[in-house]
Amino acid sequence: MFTIITWHLISTGLVFGATNPTIDTSNVNLSDTLTHLCDIGAGLAGGLAALGFLRAGILWIANGDSPQHENRARSAFVASCIGLVICLAAVTLANLVAGAVQ
Image 1 (cartoon, rainbow, N blue to C red):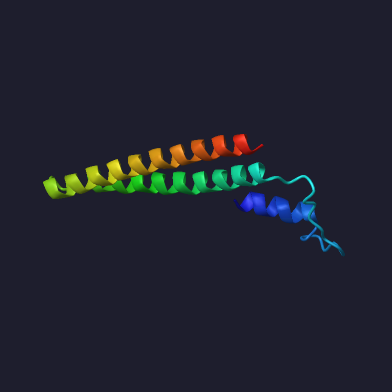
Image 2 (cartoon, rainbow, N blue to C red; image 1 turned 135 degrees about the vertical axis):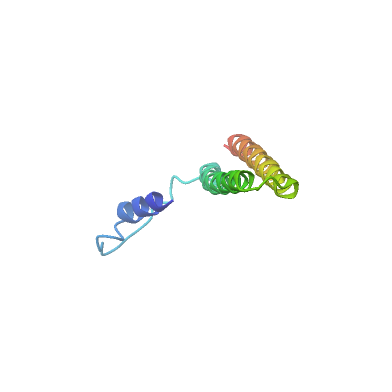
């Protein structure tokens, strides 16, 4: 995300002090915008899923032979898997809609 923002600032001349920075919106369409927003959302959701898997792994390792902690780790893992599947389904659906709009 940082690289996208940095590239945008450099390409529009905002970083180097252009006197009249303009953004060319003549060739921007709705499907490209939706696709880029979905890609950003998918990246954020994937990062959250990775953190969920990390949390589940730490809970699993540090459970201390307690069935309650093991069940909590298992439920955290299942929740991360379900969230990742929902995220992938949403991205697939959004890409299909963006392709149909084009």
